[in-house]
Length: 479
Image 1 (cartoon, helix red, strand yellow):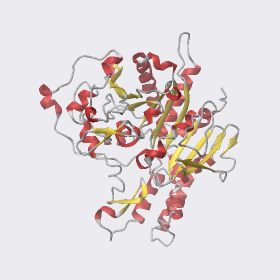
Image 2 (cartoon, rainbow, N blue to C red; image 1 turned 60 degrees about the horizontal axis):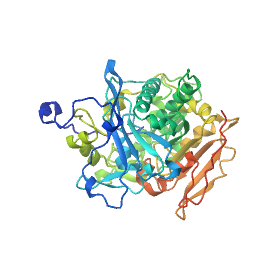
Image 3 (spheres, rainbow, N blue to C red; image 1 turned 120 degrees about the vertical axis):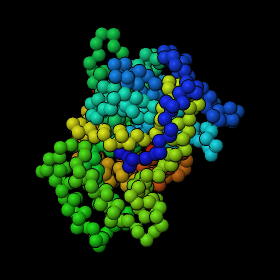
Image 4 (cartoon, rainbow, N blue to C red; image 1 turned 90 degrees about the vertical axis):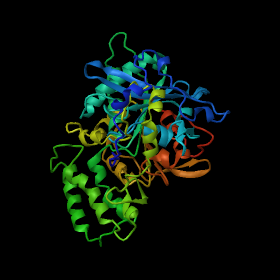
């Protein structure tokens, strides 16, 4: 879930199509998808192992012109631990491009002030091949008719995987992980569920997709239950108290949302009960500081330590304008094998407003079956308001998985030590791991990049010398 990022549209590319550097021919071989040197490529340090990259649009359904853009990053100095591992990354929103993850979180590069790529020393591609996918339709460089349900996300992503493995058949032998953040907390379980069901129903000659685990950061997984957490979160962090003049209204909405969660009131959309959604706005209104400078009046919903203008309340975080401008450059789009110019926006507000999933149950309902087969790792930046730690623990406390309900003891928390510092704490029970990360926002890899690069170790079962505290051990998987 994300507060919409709104950008000014650039002039229509179609008016200048005659000047386009783009290739018209269709791409058919993996070599055709090799990324051309991006601006700054030749200035990267000589001792840097430049990653091998593939990118472009894969045609899924020609009958309705559906194509998904992907960007695959492979370590050119693969070590044994990650040589047979592929992680698919799904950004949230809904409507935000996974390329946000490339340049602002855990991709191989960041952008400097001159719009040139520079090395990200905390890139996740050193631990796994990374595949960033723009989905659903009309997100980033992907195209097609708008879709509105998570069941459609499943169908489209399975088709994407089919096409992806046709292009990269060698990856079929790899362990597969699916990861994402925010509204990715809906996408990731639905995609995992589709893959597991596909594997169960293979016909003769079908090849299993070796899904080994999923990971969700600050996930929007059980929305209505998570909305109920705001009252405790705001009070526990001394952001509000019951002397606030809006307190009675907040309590009225809190009670009404609780009735929805308890099933006493029926919402037409399990994922979007209006009375529950309204709670965040009530808290932001109640805590607004009108005497502060205009750009500091509202709490930042992605990090309560930060402030923003009202009613944006986080719209400027993380800063996306540089990436948006860079990815709108025709030369960059050509380097990424985008077949024709795209008026790119990091977050598509049309998708954000229309992907309402009215008939899709919250992804929490899929987790028990998934975790009975593969590990689930949930991680949270402790400073996030939007999808905060309290809300995740709230829905987990009411969830039954692998024979019991909730964590057996929520106080049995192991310290997580990264580079000799306590980075957070860990709860683990019955194939499910939850990690709370200190001083981290909704976008953990953006706010704590060094710590975040070790998160994959929890779902893959790897350990490193740098992550010396809590040790994530591989598990015997029930099938």
